[in-house]
Each structure stands twice: as structure tokens, then as C-alpha cells.
Length: 79
Image (cartoon, rainbow, N blue to C red; front, side, top):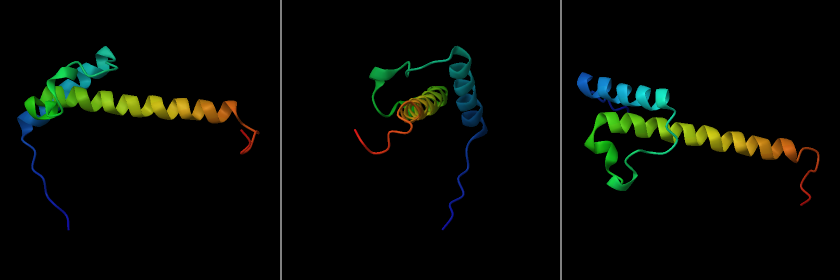
């Protein structure tokens, strides 16, 4: 069953603005860390920034995992 979600245009613009600002500033950690887990509900700009940070952290984790595999290449399953 597919849901059709309608997003307010103002919210979408603010979310994208937050994402682009975080991207431009190359933010690595959420700016509003102590605001609690509902930070994405407070402001669409903050939600966009948070989304960028989450995506960046995921990419960095993948890169570090690839480095480990390349470093240990050819060693097989032995410790």
C-alpha cells in the first residue's frame, strides 16, 4: 500500500535551505545537539541540516570500512 505524502512548499524550501547551508559550511556534527531527539520537528531548516550531517556521517563510515578492507587485502579470514 502506497501513501501519498504532501509536503508544504514552505517547509520544503526551508529544509533544502538548511541542507544547502550545512553542505556549504561542511558541518560535521549537528549544531543543536542538546535540543533533544525531536529537533527535526522544531524547524525545517534544522531538519535539513540534520539530514546533511547524517548522510555525511554515513559516507565517512563507509569510507573508513573500505580503507580497513583495502589495508587487510589478501589476509583472508585469519586474524
